[in-house]
Length: 286
Image (cartoon, rainbow, N blue to C red; front, side, top):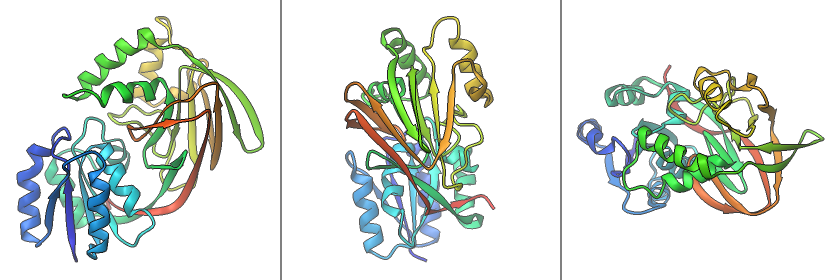
């Protein structure tokens, strides 16, 4: 089997994982290549497919995973994950999280699993996409030289004081609803990462997407909502709107940011979200 590792050396713990990855690759005559710039992981994934690689392994965070998975989706190749980012949403959802040794063992003993691909305004995503506050956080977070969960929290705290909730119209399954929301997520997996479960009960292979709209966050409801987010009970929070469908159209008053697995895109006033069922083959724990 022809295997190629694509490593983003700027992702969280990737540099510390490199020795183990190289040792694993050497024993299997696998190639290890490195990203050098933004979007380079996509180019390297296309080169791996053209070279006949049957397994392409992403070593990095959710952004690296997204770039590679978007290329592998729809092909006959299998994606492997060595999660090394600050959130690792897809890895955590699938049970691929912990030590590098464990992630590498899953490459040997895991089972291929077909999962869905979400499409947000034409951009693939595999964990979650969103607009509103979470897209603003992605915008600020991606500009930081040093990242990590603590920096994410401090960045969020600063942005929260400046952010204003917005009005959205959400169309799905023949319904048209109006939401005044702090943030609006459309999820394929159950979480953003770090076990912040924005869509409890969501699964990556059900052919559906899960929408969650949070109400305006204040000093009074902020802590209860945060606790629910990490306890997996956010859908029961006061003012929280949760919907499930294979297709959503979201309208807003002005253009703004959209994130897909934390990757940023400029988007207009009308955004369409859809799903491609069983389109990505990925190695997961047996």
